[in-house]
Length: 160
Image 1 (spheres, rainbow, N blue to C red):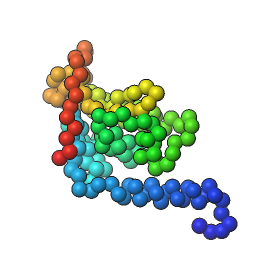
Image 2: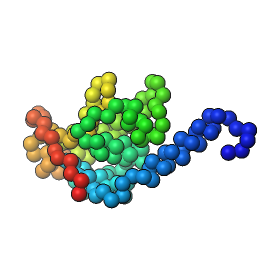
Image 3: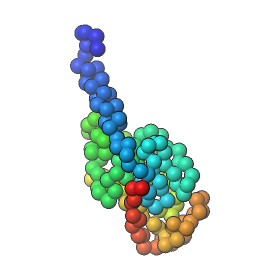
Image 4: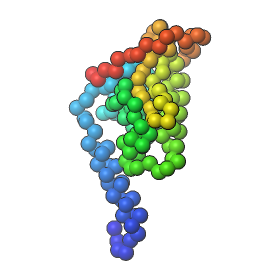
């Protein structure tokens, strides 16, 4: 950084270095995470739904990875933002909500028999795959779910 410099530029550069460092420290020794129709491959930055690749942006992938790594736990929006974006969320920022909506939309299109991300109003989000129909695991990709949803059952989240 050349002098004189503005303090905001210094802070932005520090946050960028911290963000890069956090991404580099992700566990490489973990296998794919399997939940419902999803297989999350952090070593490839890739998600598969029923064996087919799901096109996600880097941010969407990181968001899904953070939620799946904490499966069953409610993560607050601020915590999600810090883990994915690498710095504190500003008041009124709706980025997490927008990316959750985009991610849900993509997951719903490819895996309509499953609900993966649950909202805890005023708090945050929880990753807990639940089958919307008893035969959700047998539903082919692209088929609409049954007209009347049955009692949801939770799927195991397995790290292979």
